Length: 200
Image (cartoon, rainbow, N blue to C red; front, side, top):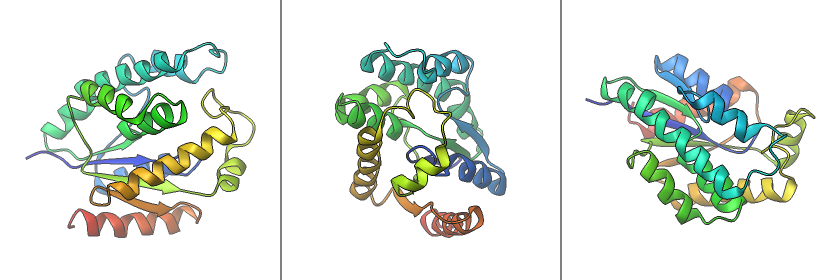
């Protein structure tokens, strides 16, 4: 019997990292995140998010995310699921499909294929998309921005719409939650959705 694999997705400052950790705690699940939570992860994360790496090509960016994800699945996610432990992950394949495939213009199908190769076709049981209006995320972000957060309002608008489009195209495996409320309010919505969608 394998564990449940729940992924939290969304744009920057939607609250997904906070909510993913809370869900993992409540479920007694293993919390993890991308990029960075594997043996090669910290080095890859530094390359990807360091604002000094302005010359990093979009294709290199996509491949670095895929490399981190391949190691992450092999080293962390797959073993935990195989032992029957639920895994809650902050970002997974959809982040690459939307950020690099849509936002960077590399093509959603192309980036999806790369990621499915990297993960040996592992897919989440449920993806929770946290969505907030652009002005809410901008206010939450402040001024200390990483390389991706500095990509500009048009980029982030396309990312937000891309996530919503993907969720609406996959209603059986995605749920969209309004992330604009308080932490407790959003948590209550997520718990209700998980109970309904996972039959708990």
